[in-house]
Length: 169
Figure (tube, rainbow, N blue to C red):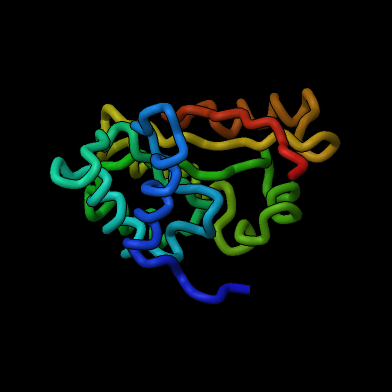
């Protein structure tokens, strides 16, 4: 279970450690895989501001993405506060039946709400698009029918779709 949320410093420490071991410059950051970023909203935004700051890491706001499972109130806060970083939502299903099964958060904030929040974001950010992330899981959300259904629900959305192969690990 959850022991504690990471502080902004602990989040930044991850980048510092990775930079020590990487021969490549790190100029793209995605908040993903360390717990739900929007359940630790204040620390995530503070750390992103440090990454973006010229006196911090000077990473362009266009190169910082915050990924969420779809915590709608926090997405609205992100929009209302006009946060400059990119936004990604893990969709992973073309319908509520599948998403309910693989992502229980969908029972609270279903796909229709995520599509509506995308429209809200698009209206405020004419040049930015939400990225919907879709992890392909064989036999769960990977059929031709699933692809057609996904294209239908996102047809009217101004968005990008990031198709991600499932990683067994």
